[in-house]
Image (cartoon, rainbow, N blue to C red; front, side):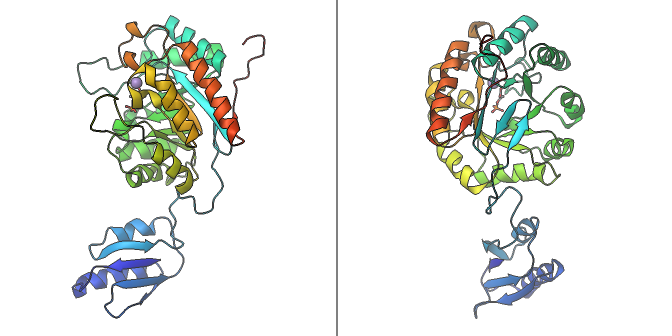
Length: 345
Ligand code: PEP
Ligand code: MN
């Protein structure tokens, strides 16, 4: 590992750096006369980088050496996350679709059948909704979970649903194939630890204003619990122009595919905030290397209580799925199809 220390460090700060280095089993050696470049010889571990970053005397980690964090690519092959029939990463692309929130049994069943027919292997739908206002619809909660459990039994489609509170992880785990951690919860370390402990796949959404380092360290909280099944989700960051709800960070998708071995999916719905832009943003995300999409779909957006303006019709989702097959094929990847017979389609 190679550290850059602040110049002219007071002796106690210098001592703190050297002591931590020795405690972690390194042999420290200064590489310059001013004592600002400190080489650490020894076996790095994932947790070492943050330990040094926390010290006031350390200006930067110039090279983490063997102390690679768990999310880092570092020559590792793609991690493939499997949930139900879906597979993300390693050349497999999967589609998640469904309503923003679970609102009624007939609609949920209808949407599940429609998105499955068009190529979704996972159904999304929130039972708990993280809303900006406490007066907005907060979701059906346990009743919503019950409907998700029924729709799974009826159609065989896997379930992606959000968990907001660490106390609900156990209940949600009984129904979900994938936990969704929403943008507003990305910084909730106790929640990340709890879903990490569950061992179930986690779809982690990037917070509106999170840097990629913050996003990856949120993933690290889950990985550090021994849960390798993490899917990163780029859903747009806060921009300055209200024309779109958020700015889809396509560069982040391309970067994450290089910097980590974790699969990345794109949420074009929350990025756009408008149904007419969902399909082009989905295309852009896949072209940048995304291993999947999560799309809000509803046959009658006028009746929904949250995010109606960005819901696309089932046939538009069908067109997005067709785009996905074509774009994935461009670089030898494949969209994983639900196991319906040709006749059922
Ligand atoms: C959602 O998926 O409906 C949602 C609330 O998304 P986000 O957390 O990205 O805002
Ligand atoms: Mn939504």
